[in-house]
Image (tube, rainbow, N blue to C red; front, side, top):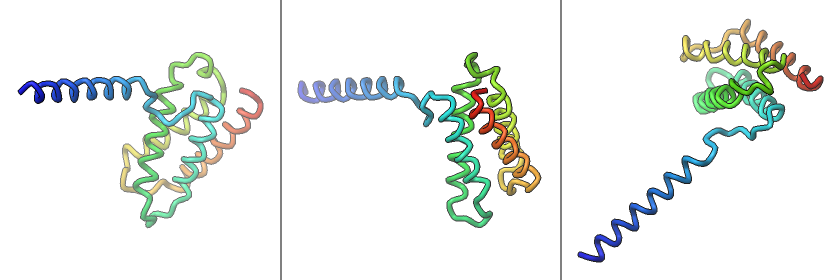
Length: 133
């Protein structure tokens, strides 16, 4: 009986430590470097937009894109250091457009018109990042 209580307490302690450490870690896949994170998200979204509709990995790649959009928004939405940058406002416009399409039409492919607009906005963001804006 004493051994059983010992093991249950040890297991409880291990679970508490594990959950505590998981809560302290960064849940997103971003580094905290705004410029690098923005370029990473752009590359991920370009990969999603280039996939064909019958690709077997499309669902997984779209899920990754949605996660990147959420991570980027959560990390930089309230960051005063980047909120005034033109690259940030253009990036948020692009992210909102794509997220809106995924929310409203989850089973439909991204229209060519939206793809072209997103590519234009991604190019504007990259140019702004090169300028430091």
